[in-house]
Length: 236
Image (cartoon, rainbow, N blue to C red; front, side):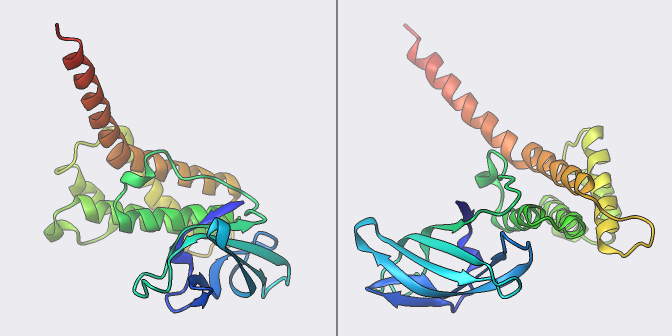
């Protein structure tokens, strides 16, 4: 089963079944043909014992059937909060690359851009993957730079970033590589096509940058706290 985000559900695509909210449509990539589509969900079934609603949709592109589960959905009593704890899809997307460890430590807007890059890669769309990664890189830089300096070309912003963030030389090279990779995916080229290896390498580079910038510092802090507690506990 493949996990989807609640943001895959259109804002107004919720309905009521036995007091539980459930989506009536969902945007995702078809696990059969790989196209980005909107599934119109039909025949919802409520399993009240397990607090779950299930439904089915046919891909509008290839007509293949896909099943969805919505676990711990919000109730009609809380009409302002139409959501659920978990959305599962079966069959899973053909390529299931999972988010990096510590992804929950990434700021929300950048996390959404990263997940879009990940989902695009999992759908086998190599060119759009590099474009999405470039968009994620732009989000990272804008978040790290003062607002007054988050202007100009992406290259100029990368140059300014070294004045505010301690980035080692390999990470500057990495960021420039991502910038070039995004340009490759965004423009049609008669000679060069973005293949799977290029898309995967670009996604891996953005993940290294996310880990270094957001996940690693927080994980180090957590480790320091644990070590300090152990040291305090062992003091006679």
